[in-house]
Length: 287
Image (tube, rainbow, N blue to C red; front, side, top):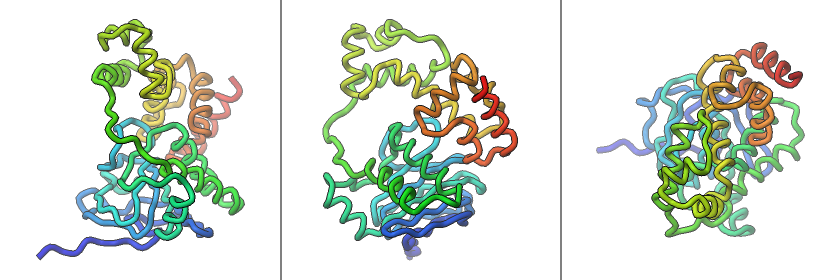
């Protein structure tokens, strides 16, 4: 007879909290992962929650494209999953809404996602990272934390489009961008890979991705930079060059615009040595 699945109550996870805040309608926590992947069983949560993995390799089966950089997942109440860190020592933000409060938010809005989602849009990541930074500051006003939590909630409080699949040529160009993001790339290069006219390609990117091809290339570069910051100890200047940016200042400007934090601030959220991250941030700001 199979053992019953674990059903976690609000705010409980496979992790040890480093800080927790309980607010009206939402519970916030920054946690350190305490179990290796093989020791995490299928489980569910009574609440609706978001998980932002900022350090360590995080595995999820949530629907959505697999990208580099911080993994951000939304799980509705009761969804059975086995999301997990490969190793102990990963860090993550958890934002939990009681099921009744989440239903009220959905009823007041335009509906809510009913399946687990992997959120990769810049607005979602920016809201999650700003919330992580505010929570770890330990002195943020409750109003600020509530507002940032609702900004994040909005990313799952809108209906998803059914029956729409990316055209095959766009999947080819997205794969090409993922593989060659650190090289100079023009629209003609993407059109040649896709086998479509450049005008058709530009129009298709705007329709399907909501962004120009150049914006997607920048996103890929930023995702790789974030991934390297999460996993290694390379100097930020070296990461900037490896990801196709002109220099550290260029990465700093683009990273802050996309994610709402500088690379040095993000590095500190990822658990990198604070003195190194701070010095690199200050060097970048002064450049």
